[in-house]
Image (cartoon, rainbow, N blue to C red; front, top):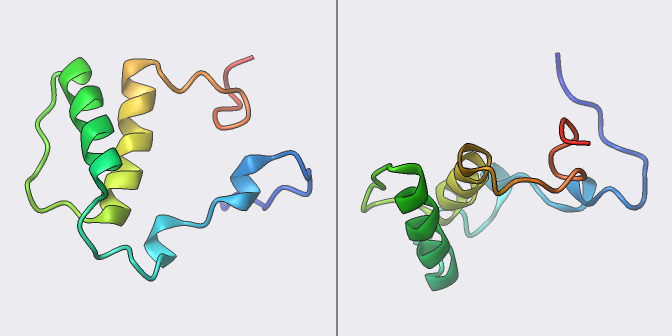
Length: 81
């Protein structure tokens, strides 16, 4: 089952493109991404690969935010109310 795009103009999920479609997705992650990933990985007790791409870093940030409980925004995580 695929998720239908939101028609709610306030739903930021509809504004964020899929990292897999980024033109720069194969580039190395930004310094900001790396710093945030290191923080989240440390909190989650996980290791990060050295050769992660910008797109992979974005997806990993989303995963680690959920794993660490930092994804408490009900717009990004509608299961939290």
